[in-house]
Amino acid sequence: MKFTIIEARARRSKFDELAGSCYRDNNSQIVEDLNKQNKKVYFGIQDEGGMYTVIGEKSVYFSVVSGQEGEIPNSDFLGVLQKNAMKVGKGGEQ
Image (cartoon, rainbow, N blue to C red; front, top):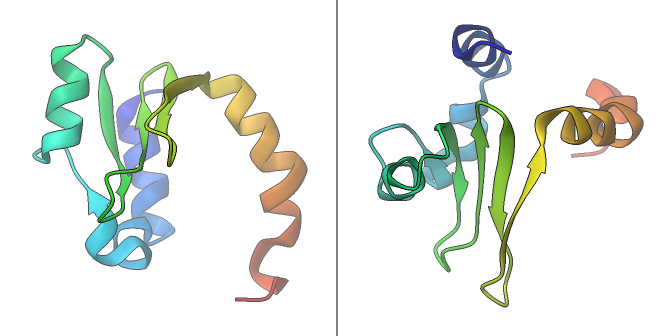
C-alpha cells in the first residue's frame, strides 16, 4: 500500500491525536534509526520505556518489554486487525 494512502487513513482516524505524546513521525529518532536499517518506515507509536510499533512500507516493526524486536508483514497485520480490532469498531468500550 502506498504511503499516501496509509498517511491519509491515519489522518482520518486521528492516529496522531489519539497517540498523543507517544506518536512518532518520520522526524523521530526511532523512525530514523529503522530507516537507516533500510526498513522504510513512516510513523508509529513509542512509549516512554522505548517499546514501539511503527508502520512501514512492507511490514509493521515492533519491540516488546524484553527488548526483543520483530516485524510482521503488512498483509498479516491487516488480517489480525480485521479479525480482531476492526470488529469492535466505534461501538467498542474505550
